[in-house]
Length: 315
Image 1 (spheres, one colour):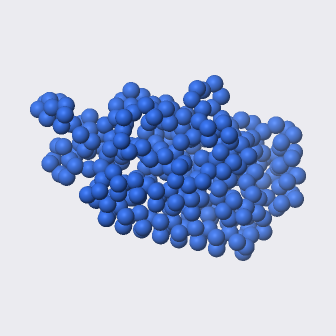
Image 2 (image 1 turned 180 degrees about the vertical axis):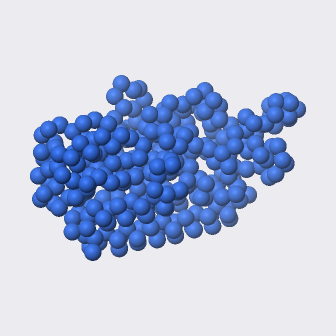
Image 3 (image 1 turned 120 degrees about the vertical axis):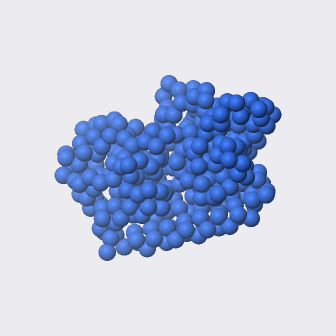
């Protein structure tokens, strides 16, 4: 996994000829193994789906490196070439404008837009602002929230759509893709049950975050997300906003301000200090790093559940 075809020795590539350089992984080209289904994913939640569903048949690479803030991604010439060579691109339109543009300009046959596989909603400005950038997507302009992977039910809907797309694009391994998809959907169903049961009896239903990423999760489990400074996780809250949140914290029994692993905790700590609240991590799972509370989607989501249970005072 994650081995680029550029590692094929130049002499070997020359002997193969340009026409033979199909979308296989470098290890298959070098060792003579069965060629793999080559998927380029836009960022971690998409790469995780591709790996889980593709299994041994897929060679998955991500355009967003671990620890990189996905919204700020710019596509390199090398990554554009990588997209052109791939069998499939899996992305979430509206989250990364540079990816949307690059995918639309490639001749890749299988383009899988995760946003088209479930229903996106407007969570009051939870879409990301990219002021000064060109290529705004309709989703961003209309405030539709792209953070669907934080709702296990919607993530499962996307998984089913991705599975069907893999089956169609690589029919030789369709049975395995179908089986892997079913296993992933079942596991996501279990995660949904964990959240439902784990959050149903809580003292408070309101949580504070510095980034409005958890609208789908909040809606799914009957909670209310309050973002400190809207869409920009780096900006400081105004004095009026701090006072407003202090009053809300007292009224709703809020104990904790959540921050993330990929952005500064300064905003959350400013509010927590001024409002005498605790801080903790609620991970929007846009990437896995050494700071993440887990090695994959499921482990980090379970850590998020525990953090919410502690903050909301579950019985």
